[in-house]
Amino acid sequence: MRINYLVAAVVTLSALTAVDAKAANTASVLQFGAANLSSTNQISPGNNTATTLQFGAFNRAGSAQLGSLASVNSATIGQGGTTPTATNNAAVGQVGGANTSLIGQIGSNNAAAVGQLGILNGSTILQAVP
Image (cartoon, rainbow, N blue to C red; front, side, top):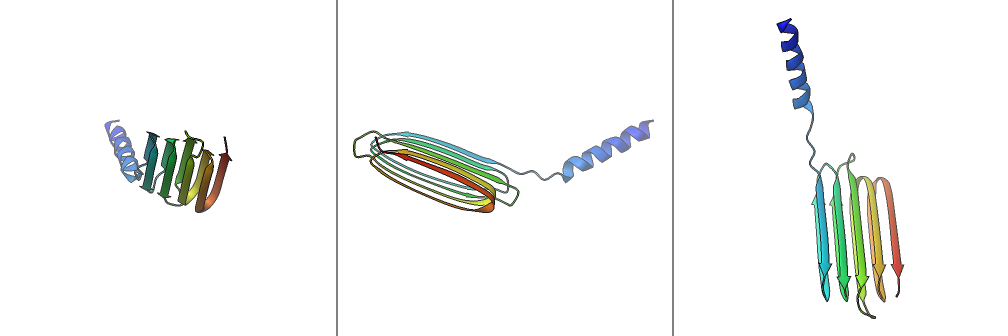
């Protein structure tokens, strides 16, 4: 009976050490000011998640994510202009298995770019002038 428990314990520990640990990256940025600049770079064989929210007269955000074919990359950028002539610039670059991005901009001058390389890619860009 004791041998059965010992064998079961050894098999369980062997299975646990055979599992690869994959770290995930998560970044969140919130900025209020006249001029807001943000750059997020993430590299991981696991999942990468980045969220950037900016409120100001001049907003610029960039997010670069590099993962493996089994990873999920997610980037969200929200920019709200606080003046009648607000400028918003956003760029997202993603390489991985599944890539998703969302960019929302409210301002007089909005520019956004998305580049994705992966098995499953999806992106949404919403722009509005107040």
